Each structure stands twice: as C-alpha cells, then as structure tokens.
Length: 258
Image 1 (spheres, helix red, strand yellow):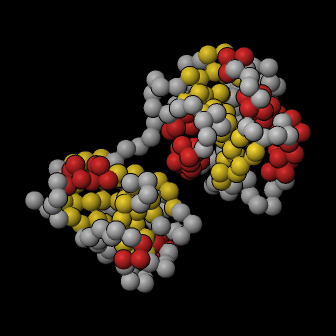
Image 2 (image 1 turned 90 degrees about the horizontal axis):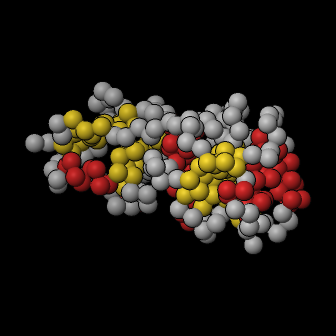
Image 3 (image 1 turned 90 degrees about the vertical axis):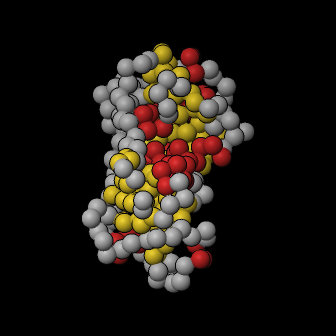
C-alpha cells in the first residue's frame, strides 16, 4: 500500500480537503492519505517546511509528500527525490528550506495542466498517485536546477552570545527555536548562561535548563531541549507566546558568562 502525506494552509471548514481526498481515492484507491498538518498560516512557508522536515523521516521510504502551501506560481511544480522519499512542491522556494544544497534530484513536472486554480488537485495529486503506483520520477518530469530557493536562517554567534529565532509555536504555545543542543554546548562549553526571550527583553531571564516539561512549577517559565534537540521555551500550563508577546521569527538571545 502506497502512502501520501499532505501539508496545507487550509482551514477546517474549507472544502479543499474533501475534494482532494476524493480525487486521491478515485485515482489510487489503495493509497493511504495522511494529513501532516492543516491550518498552516497562509503563505507561511517556513512553518510548512518545519512540519514536513521533522515529520517525513518517520514515514516509510517511498512515501510521497505533497506541499499545498503558497501553490500559486507561474512555473510548473517540482518533484524532488530526497532520502528515499518523494516531495511534490510548488516552485516557491520551499525546496531550499527542506533540502541541503546539492543533495536532491529535482524534476519539473510535465504532462500536467500548464496553469491551474487548484494546483494540488490538478497537478500534484495525479503525479503523487503515479509515484505510489510505481512510476519512475524521470517519467513524470525533466531534471531542473533553475528553481526558486529560500535559505534557512541559522542562529548567529558573536563573542559568547547566541542569537536565534523562534521557528515554530506549537499547540501549547511553546516557542521552538533554531538553536540546537549541539550549538549551545559547543559555544557554551559548560559555562553559566542567561536566556532572554526577545531582543532586549530583560524582564524574563532563564538561567537553567529543564530535563522534562514537568520539572518546572505551574506558571513558571522554562527552557529545555526538546525531542528535536532544539531549544524550546514555554510556561508550565501557560501560554508562553502570549505572555512573552512573541511570534515566529522573534529573537531569542543566550549570553554565556566568561
């Protein structure tokens, strides 16, 4: 049984999911369709990339992953082959957020409508069903290198200070950053530290890392490295994003003492 995943910015009361699900089951009735995420903020490619990047490794090799965020493009969609998986993507820059440069086979789809008001339905779903039915990628498009690329933003280091960004706010309003455990340990070298959520915000300061979410009393702020080994900041049984007034792309600063 083949598997297709779907990541979109559709809202729960939109008809799009029903239409696409019906079309998938009509073209490849034996496939298993899995929603990775629905309700990504409209046009928010970094959020779509975050979900896809951290979810796909847990699926079987050969899974087809469809991105349905910011699909409007003058160019035909892309088929990328990476790490044993297939990715059907708009040519909107998201490929640069998903794959390290030079590690991916990329094809531009052919044999699909040149233009579409519903690209997921008319362009991506037919290609996905052909892939799960065994079609080779090179039969669905032509190799291409001239695609749009958005580069991920990495945490910056400056004289014992790490400045990172909030890259995702989860269902509990916890702030997930782009600061990895490896970077923290490499720069910190075991030194005492202070974490300041937000540029110049000295009202909230964190000086210890928790091992688990239950280590911190209710309503207290905490920081820990989560299951992705990324620094996460939250408030136990509270709303960190609202209390700290932070959104995605907000700054998180760590200062290590000499």
